[in-house]
Image (tube, rainbow, N blue to C red; front, side, top):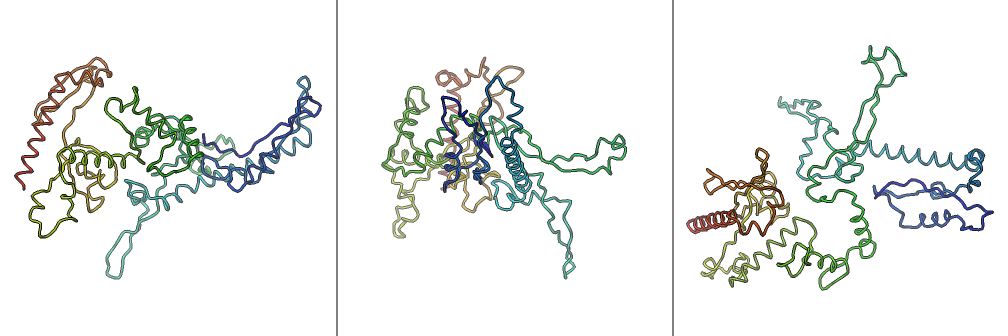
Length: 417
Protein backbone atom coordinates (compact mmCIF):
# COMPACT_ATOMS: atom_id res chain seq x y z
CA UNK A 1 0.00 0.00 0.00
CA UNK A 2 3.00 2.34 -0.07
CA UNK A 3 2.97 3.15 3.61
CA UNK A 4 5.92 4.97 5.16
CA UNK A 5 7.39 2.55 7.72
CA UNK A 6 9.89 4.32 9.95
CA UNK A 7 10.70 1.52 12.39
CA UNK A 8 10.21 -2.21 13.06
CA UNK A 9 10.09 -3.72 16.54
CA UNK A 10 10.58 -7.41 17.33
CA UNK A 11 9.84 -9.31 20.53
CA UNK A 12 12.55 -11.84 21.27
CA UNK A 13 11.69 -15.41 22.21
CA UNK A 14 11.68 -16.50 25.84
CA UNK A 15 15.07 -18.18 26.39
CA UNK A 16 13.42 -20.66 28.77
CA UNK A 17 10.88 -21.74 26.14
CA UNK A 18 11.28 -25.00 24.24
CA UNK A 19 10.31 -23.14 21.02
CA UNK A 20 13.18 -20.74 20.49
CA UNK A 21 13.41 -19.28 16.97
CA UNK A 22 15.85 -16.50 17.73
CA UNK A 23 15.54 -12.85 16.70
CA UNK A 24 15.03 -11.76 13.10
CA UNK A 25 16.27 -8.25 13.82
CA UNK A 26 19.88 -8.82 12.69
CA UNK A 27 18.81 -10.49 9.42
CA UNK A 28 16.42 -7.67 8.61
CA UNK A 29 19.05 -5.04 9.47
CA UNK A 30 21.43 -6.71 7.03
CA UNK A 31 18.69 -6.82 4.35
CA UNK A 32 17.80 -3.15 4.85
CA UNK A 33 21.48 -2.15 4.61
CA UNK A 34 21.99 -3.47 1.08
CA UNK A 35 22.86 -1.20 -1.83
CA UNK A 36 19.32 -1.01 -3.19
CA UNK A 37 17.55 0.46 -0.19
CA UNK A 38 13.95 -0.39 0.60
CA UNK A 39 11.62 2.39 -0.50
CA UNK A 40 8.56 3.98 1.03
CA UNK A 41 5.47 4.89 -0.96
CA UNK A 42 6.85 8.40 -1.26
CA UNK A 43 10.00 7.05 -2.91
CA UNK A 44 12.31 7.86 -0.01
CA UNK A 45 14.63 5.25 1.42
CA UNK A 46 13.47 3.36 4.49
CA UNK A 47 15.57 2.60 7.57
CA UNK A 48 18.49 4.97 6.99
CA UNK A 49 20.12 3.63 10.16
CA UNK A 50 18.91 0.02 10.67
CA UNK A 51 20.68 -0.23 14.03
CA UNK A 52 18.26 2.41 15.39
CA UNK A 53 15.17 1.77 13.30
CA UNK A 54 15.06 -2.05 13.55
CA UNK A 55 15.13 -3.10 17.22
CA UNK A 56 14.31 -6.13 19.29
CA UNK A 57 12.77 -5.99 22.75
CA UNK A 58 13.29 -8.58 25.48
CA UNK A 59 10.75 -11.41 25.70
CA UNK A 60 7.51 -10.74 27.53
CA UNK A 61 7.05 -12.32 30.96
CA UNK A 62 4.67 -15.27 31.37
CA UNK A 63 1.04 -14.34 30.74
CA UNK A 64 0.10 -14.60 34.41
CA UNK A 65 2.69 -12.01 35.43
CA UNK A 66 2.06 -8.22 35.21
CA UNK A 67 4.02 -6.14 32.69
CA UNK A 68 5.03 -3.31 35.05
CA UNK A 69 8.56 -4.59 35.64
CA UNK A 70 9.01 -5.33 31.92
CA UNK A 71 8.03 -1.77 30.94
CA UNK A 72 10.28 -0.31 33.66
CA UNK A 73 13.33 -2.39 32.74
CA UNK A 74 16.38 -0.42 31.57
CA UNK A 75 16.54 -2.24 28.23
CA UNK A 76 12.90 -1.55 27.31
CA UNK A 77 13.09 2.09 28.47
CA UNK A 78 16.33 2.70 26.57
CA UNK A 79 15.03 1.17 23.33
CA UNK A 80 11.67 2.90 23.68
CA UNK A 81 13.37 6.28 24.06
CA UNK A 82 15.50 5.53 21.01
CA UNK A 83 12.40 4.67 18.98
CA UNK A 84 10.70 7.81 20.22
CA UNK A 85 13.58 9.92 18.87
CA UNK A 86 13.55 8.04 15.55
CA UNK A 87 9.82 8.53 15.03
CA UNK A 88 9.91 12.15 16.18
CA UNK A 89 12.79 12.93 13.79
CA UNK A 90 10.97 11.17 10.95
CA UNK A 91 7.82 13.18 11.69
CA UNK A 92 9.72 16.47 11.74
CA UNK A 93 11.40 15.57 8.43
CA UNK A 94 8.06 14.67 6.84
CA UNK A 95 6.45 17.90 8.03
CA UNK A 96 9.37 19.97 6.71
CA UNK A 97 9.19 18.27 3.31
CA UNK A 98 5.45 18.84 3.14
CA UNK A 99 5.89 22.50 4.05
CA UNK A 100 8.31 22.98 1.16
CA UNK A 101 6.61 20.62 -1.29
CA UNK A 102 4.25 23.08 -2.95
CA UNK A 103 6.81 25.79 -3.63
CA UNK A 104 9.51 23.35 -4.70
CA UNK A 105 7.10 21.34 -6.85
CA UNK A 106 5.75 24.44 -8.55
CA UNK A 107 9.28 25.35 -9.64
CA UNK A 108 10.33 21.95 -10.99
CA UNK A 109 7.09 20.32 -12.25
CA UNK A 110 5.48 21.43 -15.54
CA UNK A 111 1.73 20.96 -15.12
CA UNK A 112 -0.47 19.98 -18.09
CA UNK A 113 -3.38 22.26 -19.05
CA UNK A 114 -2.19 24.82 -16.52
CA UNK A 115 -0.72 28.29 -16.92
CA UNK A 116 1.71 28.64 -14.05
CA UNK A 117 1.10 32.38 -14.09
CA UNK A 118 -2.45 31.74 -12.93
CA UNK A 119 -0.98 30.74 -9.56
CA UNK A 120 0.42 34.21 -8.95
CA UNK A 121 -1.13 36.25 -6.17
CA UNK A 122 -2.45 39.26 -8.09
CA UNK A 123 -2.70 41.32 -4.89
CA UNK A 124 1.09 41.16 -4.50
CA UNK A 125 1.91 42.60 -7.94
CA UNK A 126 4.00 45.75 -7.94
CA UNK A 127 4.33 48.55 -10.50
CA UNK A 128 7.63 49.51 -12.11
CA UNK A 129 8.28 52.70 -14.07
CA UNK A 130 11.20 52.52 -16.51
CA UNK A 131 13.26 55.28 -18.10
CA UNK A 132 10.63 55.82 -20.78
CA UNK A 133 8.04 56.56 -18.09
CA UNK A 134 6.26 53.36 -19.05
CA UNK A 135 4.66 51.55 -16.14
CA UNK A 136 4.66 47.77 -16.12
CA UNK A 137 3.34 45.28 -13.61
CA UNK A 138 5.90 43.04 -11.94
CA UNK A 139 4.47 39.64 -10.97
CA UNK A 140 4.40 39.09 -7.25
CA UNK A 141 4.64 35.97 -5.16
CA UNK A 142 2.87 32.71 -5.87
CA UNK A 143 -0.30 31.72 -4.07
CA UNK A 144 0.35 28.16 -2.93
CA UNK A 145 -3.28 27.73 -1.92
CA UNK A 146 -4.12 27.38 -5.64
CA UNK A 147 -2.26 24.08 -5.93
CA UNK A 148 -3.18 20.75 -4.33
CA UNK A 149 -0.68 18.73 -2.33
CA UNK A 150 -1.62 15.03 -2.33
CA UNK A 151 0.06 12.94 0.34
CA UNK A 152 -1.75 9.72 -0.59
CA UNK A 153 -4.86 8.41 -2.33
CA UNK A 154 -7.17 5.51 -1.46
CA UNK A 155 -10.48 4.46 -2.92
CA UNK A 156 -12.18 7.46 -4.50
CA UNK A 157 -10.40 10.06 -2.40
CA UNK A 158 -7.19 12.09 -2.33
CA UNK A 159 -5.60 12.68 1.07
CA UNK A 160 -4.50 16.28 0.69
CA UNK A 161 -2.43 18.53 2.91
CA UNK A 162 -3.98 21.91 3.73
CA UNK A 163 -2.78 24.80 5.86
CA UNK A 164 -4.90 25.66 8.88
CA UNK A 165 -4.41 28.67 11.12
CA UNK A 166 -4.88 28.09 14.84
CA UNK A 167 -4.70 30.51 17.78
CA UNK A 168 -2.06 30.06 20.45
CA UNK A 169 -3.23 30.86 23.96
CA UNK A 170 -3.29 29.05 27.26
CA UNK A 171 -7.04 28.80 27.71
CA UNK A 172 -7.22 32.54 28.34
CA UNK A 173 -10.80 33.45 29.12
CA UNK A 174 -10.26 36.91 27.64
CA UNK A 175 -8.61 35.63 24.44
CA UNK A 176 -11.77 36.00 22.34
CA UNK A 177 -12.14 39.60 23.38
CA UNK A 178 -8.73 40.44 21.94
CA UNK A 179 -8.56 37.86 19.17
CA UNK A 180 -6.54 40.06 16.80
CA UNK A 181 -3.61 40.06 19.22
CA UNK A 182 -3.65 36.34 19.98
CA UNK A 183 -0.56 34.66 18.45
CA UNK A 184 -1.48 32.40 15.53
CA UNK A 185 0.26 29.42 14.05
CA UNK A 186 -0.13 27.82 10.60
CA UNK A 187 -0.24 24.04 10.83
CA UNK A 188 -0.73 21.39 8.18
CA UNK A 189 -3.61 18.95 8.32
CA UNK A 190 -4.73 16.04 6.18
CA UNK A 191 -8.17 16.22 4.62
CA UNK A 192 -9.98 14.08 2.05
CA UNK A 193 -11.07 15.30 -1.36
CA UNK A 194 -13.29 13.34 -3.71
CA UNK A 195 -11.55 12.47 -6.99
CA UNK A 196 -14.56 13.36 -9.14
CA UNK A 197 -12.88 12.75 -12.52
CA UNK A 198 -11.19 9.51 -11.40
CA UNK A 199 -7.84 11.18 -12.14
CA UNK A 200 -8.68 11.72 -15.79
CA UNK A 201 -10.65 8.51 -16.11
CA UNK A 202 -7.88 6.12 -15.05
CA UNK A 203 -9.03 5.07 -11.58
CA UNK A 204 -12.32 3.30 -12.20
CA UNK A 205 -11.44 0.75 -9.53
CA UNK A 206 -10.22 3.37 -7.08
CA UNK A 207 -6.79 4.41 -5.85
CA UNK A 208 -4.57 1.95 -4.03
CA UNK A 209 -6.52 -1.13 -5.13
CA UNK A 210 -4.39 -3.87 -3.58
CA UNK A 211 -4.94 -6.48 -6.29
CA UNK A 212 -3.72 -4.07 -8.98
CA UNK A 213 -0.76 -2.96 -6.85
CA UNK A 214 0.27 -6.56 -6.22
CA UNK A 215 -0.05 -7.52 -9.89
CA UNK A 216 1.97 -4.48 -10.99
CA UNK A 217 4.61 -5.14 -8.33
CA UNK A 218 4.88 -8.79 -9.36
CA UNK A 219 5.29 -7.90 -13.04
CA UNK A 220 7.79 -5.12 -12.24
CA UNK A 221 9.79 -7.43 -9.99
CA UNK A 222 9.85 -10.32 -12.44
CA UNK A 223 10.19 -8.50 -15.76
CA UNK A 224 10.70 -4.77 -15.36
CA UNK A 225 10.30 -3.49 -18.93
CA UNK A 226 10.91 -6.01 -21.71
CA UNK A 227 10.87 -5.48 -25.47
CA UNK A 228 7.65 -6.71 -27.13
CA UNK A 229 8.20 -7.48 -30.87
CA UNK A 230 8.22 -11.27 -31.38
CA UNK A 231 7.94 -11.72 -27.61
CA UNK A 232 5.34 -13.46 -25.45
CA UNK A 233 5.19 -13.66 -21.68
CA UNK A 234 2.64 -14.75 -19.12
CA UNK A 235 1.00 -11.39 -18.21
CA UNK A 236 0.40 -10.44 -21.85
CA UNK A 237 -0.96 -13.86 -22.83
CA UNK A 238 -3.26 -14.19 -19.81
CA UNK A 239 -4.68 -10.69 -20.23
CA UNK A 240 -5.17 -11.18 -23.98
CA UNK A 241 -7.06 -14.41 -23.36
CA UNK A 242 -9.30 -12.66 -20.87
CA UNK A 243 -10.01 -9.72 -23.22
CA UNK A 244 -10.80 -12.04 -26.13
CA UNK A 245 -12.64 -14.68 -24.11
CA UNK A 246 -16.41 -15.24 -23.77
CA UNK A 247 -16.71 -12.57 -21.05
CA UNK A 248 -14.22 -10.15 -22.61
CA UNK A 249 -14.98 -6.93 -24.51
CA UNK A 250 -13.33 -8.32 -27.66
CA UNK A 251 -15.49 -11.43 -27.80
CA UNK A 252 -17.12 -12.01 -31.25
CA UNK A 253 -15.11 -9.34 -33.10
CA UNK A 254 -11.43 -9.24 -32.05
CA UNK A 255 -8.75 -11.85 -32.77
CA UNK A 256 -5.67 -10.27 -31.21
CA UNK A 257 -4.76 -7.67 -28.59
CA UNK A 258 -2.37 -4.79 -29.36
CA UNK A 259 -0.79 -3.37 -26.21
CA UNK A 260 0.07 0.31 -26.01
CA UNK A 261 1.34 2.72 -23.37
CA UNK A 262 -1.61 4.97 -22.55
CA UNK A 263 -5.01 6.13 -23.75
CA UNK A 264 -3.80 8.79 -26.17
CA UNK A 265 -1.25 6.48 -27.79
CA UNK A 266 -3.87 3.71 -27.98
CA UNK A 267 -6.13 6.10 -29.91
CA UNK A 268 -3.25 6.82 -32.31
CA UNK A 269 -2.86 3.07 -32.86
CA UNK A 270 -6.60 2.63 -33.46
CA UNK A 271 -6.74 5.46 -36.01
CA UNK A 272 -3.75 4.09 -37.93
CA UNK A 273 -5.26 0.60 -37.89
CA UNK A 274 -8.59 1.94 -39.12
CA UNK A 275 -6.98 3.93 -41.93
CA UNK A 276 -4.85 1.01 -43.09
CA UNK A 277 -7.86 -1.32 -43.04
CA UNK A 278 -9.94 1.21 -44.99
CA UNK A 279 -7.22 1.61 -47.63
CA UNK A 280 -6.55 -2.12 -47.91
CA UNK A 281 -10.24 -2.97 -48.38
CA UNK A 282 -10.49 -0.39 -51.20
CA UNK A 283 -7.07 -1.00 -52.81
CA UNK A 284 -5.96 2.55 -51.99
CA UNK A 285 -2.21 3.14 -52.16
CA UNK A 286 -1.43 5.03 -48.95
CA UNK A 287 1.96 6.07 -50.33
CA UNK A 288 0.17 8.23 -52.91
CA UNK A 289 -1.10 10.36 -50.05
CA UNK A 290 2.43 11.05 -48.82
CA UNK A 291 3.64 14.46 -50.04
CA UNK A 292 7.24 13.35 -49.52
CA UNK A 293 6.81 10.82 -52.31
CA UNK A 294 5.31 13.33 -54.73
CA UNK A 295 7.19 13.68 -58.02
CA UNK A 296 6.99 17.12 -59.59
CA UNK A 297 6.51 15.47 -62.97
CA UNK A 298 3.77 13.13 -61.72
CA UNK A 299 0.57 14.74 -63.00
CA UNK A 300 -1.54 11.85 -61.68
CA UNK A 301 -0.38 12.24 -58.08
CA UNK A 302 -3.06 14.73 -57.01
CA UNK A 303 -5.77 12.85 -58.88
CA UNK A 304 -4.90 9.60 -57.13
CA UNK A 305 -4.74 11.09 -53.62
CA UNK A 306 -7.55 10.18 -51.25
CA UNK A 307 -8.33 12.54 -48.39
CA UNK A 308 -9.20 10.43 -45.37
CA UNK A 309 -11.55 11.79 -42.73
CA UNK A 310 -12.38 10.29 -39.35
CA UNK A 311 -15.95 10.35 -38.07
CA UNK A 312 -16.04 11.47 -34.43
CA UNK A 313 -18.38 12.96 -31.86
CA UNK A 314 -18.73 16.63 -31.15
CA UNK A 315 -17.00 17.77 -27.94
CA UNK A 316 -14.72 14.73 -28.11
CA UNK A 317 -11.28 14.49 -26.55
CA UNK A 318 -8.88 11.64 -27.23
CA UNK A 319 -5.59 12.80 -25.74
CA UNK A 320 -2.68 15.13 -26.38
CA UNK A 321 -0.56 13.36 -28.99
CA UNK A 322 -0.43 15.06 -32.37
CA UNK A 323 -2.64 12.70 -34.39
CA UNK A 324 -5.57 12.38 -32.02
CA UNK A 325 -5.64 16.14 -31.39
CA UNK A 326 -6.59 16.49 -35.07
CA UNK A 327 -9.54 14.14 -34.59
CA UNK A 328 -11.31 16.64 -32.34
CA UNK A 329 -13.05 19.95 -32.80
CA UNK A 330 -11.11 23.13 -31.99
CA UNK A 331 -11.10 23.72 -28.24
CA UNK A 332 -8.81 24.86 -25.45
CA UNK A 333 -7.30 21.36 -25.47
CA UNK A 334 -5.92 21.59 -29.02
CA UNK A 335 -6.41 24.97 -30.73
CA UNK A 336 -3.26 27.01 -30.26
CA UNK A 337 -1.48 24.21 -28.42
CA UNK A 338 0.88 23.57 -31.35
CA UNK A 339 1.25 24.96 -34.91
CA UNK A 340 0.40 21.70 -36.70
CA UNK A 341 -3.13 21.37 -35.35
CA UNK A 342 -5.72 20.92 -38.09
CA UNK A 343 -9.12 19.32 -37.41
CA UNK A 344 -9.54 16.36 -39.74
CA UNK A 345 -12.91 14.91 -38.86
CA UNK A 346 -16.64 14.95 -39.36
CA UNK A 347 -17.95 15.74 -35.90
CA UNK A 348 -21.45 14.44 -35.26
CA UNK A 349 -23.93 15.40 -32.59
CA UNK A 350 -24.66 12.69 -30.05
CA UNK A 351 -27.68 11.43 -28.11
CA UNK A 352 -28.04 12.48 -24.47
CA UNK A 353 -28.99 10.10 -21.65
CA UNK A 354 -30.73 11.90 -18.80
CA UNK A 355 -33.45 11.74 -16.17
CA UNK A 356 -36.39 14.01 -17.00
CA UNK A 357 -39.05 14.27 -14.29
CA UNK A 358 -37.83 10.99 -12.87
CA UNK A 359 -37.95 9.17 -16.21
CA UNK A 360 -34.82 7.78 -17.88
CA UNK A 361 -34.69 9.14 -21.43
CA UNK A 362 -32.48 9.30 -24.52
CA UNK A 363 -32.74 12.42 -26.66
CA UNK A 364 -31.50 12.23 -30.24
CA UNK A 365 -31.20 15.50 -32.17
CA UNK A 366 -32.33 15.53 -35.80
CA UNK A 367 -30.17 16.84 -38.60
CA UNK A 368 -31.28 20.45 -38.42
CA UNK A 369 -31.03 20.51 -34.61
CA UNK A 370 -34.47 22.10 -34.49
CA UNK A 371 -36.26 18.99 -33.27
CA UNK A 372 -35.35 15.88 -31.36
CA UNK A 373 -36.77 12.47 -30.71
CA UNK A 374 -37.06 11.12 -27.18
CA UNK A 375 -37.15 7.50 -26.06
CA UNK A 376 -37.86 6.39 -22.50
CA UNK A 377 -36.45 3.43 -20.58
CA UNK A 378 -37.13 1.71 -17.29
CA UNK A 379 -33.51 1.08 -16.23
CA UNK A 380 -29.96 2.00 -17.12
CA UNK A 381 -29.37 -1.62 -18.14
CA UNK A 382 -31.96 -1.20 -20.89
CA UNK A 383 -30.14 1.89 -22.14
CA UNK A 384 -26.87 -0.01 -22.54
CA UNK A 385 -28.36 -3.24 -23.87
CA UNK A 386 -26.59 -3.35 -27.25
CA UNK A 387 -28.58 -6.23 -28.75
CA UNK A 388 -31.83 -4.54 -27.82
CA UNK A 389 -30.68 -1.23 -29.32
CA UNK A 390 -29.66 -2.83 -32.63
CA UNK A 391 -33.26 -3.90 -33.24
CA UNK A 392 -34.86 -0.66 -32.06
CA UNK A 393 -36.24 2.26 -34.06
CA UNK A 394 -33.58 4.44 -32.42
CA UNK A 395 -30.87 2.46 -34.18
CA UNK A 396 -32.52 3.16 -37.53
CA UNK A 397 -32.69 6.84 -36.64
CA UNK A 398 -28.98 6.89 -35.72
CA UNK A 399 -28.04 5.08 -38.92
CA UNK A 400 -30.02 7.38 -41.19
CA UNK A 401 -28.78 10.52 -39.41
CA UNK A 402 -25.11 9.54 -39.62
CA UNK A 403 -25.41 8.42 -43.27
CA UNK A 404 -27.15 11.65 -44.29
CA UNK A 405 -24.57 13.83 -42.53
CA UNK A 406 -21.73 11.84 -44.04
CA UNK A 407 -23.21 12.16 -47.56
CA UNK A 408 -23.55 15.92 -47.09
CA UNK A 409 -19.97 16.15 -45.84
CA UNK A 410 -18.59 14.26 -48.86
CA UNK A 411 -20.57 16.44 -51.22
CA UNK A 412 -19.17 19.59 -49.60
CA UNK A 413 -15.64 18.21 -49.87
CA UNK A 414 -16.09 17.47 -53.58
CA UNK A 415 -17.38 20.98 -54.20
CA UNK A 416 -14.32 22.46 -52.50
CA UNK A 417 -11.89 20.50 -54.70
